Image (cartoon, rainbow, N blue to C red; front, side, top):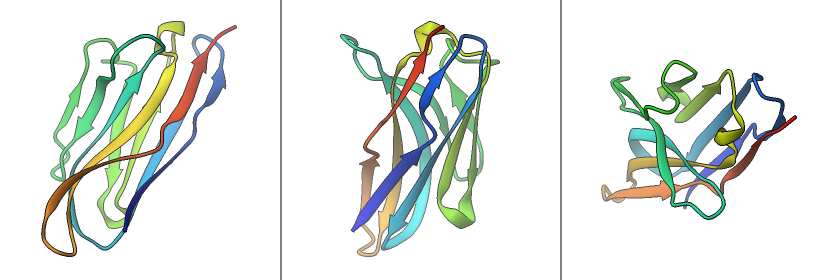
Amino acid sequence: QVQLVESGGGLVQPGGSLRLTCAASGRIVRVDTMGWYRQAPGKERELVATITSGERRNYSDSVKGRFTISRDNAKNTVYLQMNNLKPEDTAVYYCNANLVKFDYRRSDYWGQGTQVTVSS
């Protein structure tokens, strides 16, 4: 009943940019913290950035100054603008949302993941 749908991944050269989008849909009362995580081959999933409904932001040290997270509360959508991409940014990027559903229960939801590959 709740879905997170991601888009915007792809192949880009080092130094390039990509913008990821994730939209939450379904019987949602409220979306609180939204965020992006990533998982590279052979590694654990790690935090990239989060943003609260009040737009308080948190970034991992590895992306500070290069990535920007933002959201549109009216659309239950979160964005990740990624600039100056590096090969080490290559991973599957997952969207996460902590939200309150129609039954007033709070749950965490994950998107299906979108591949970002940084290579020349």
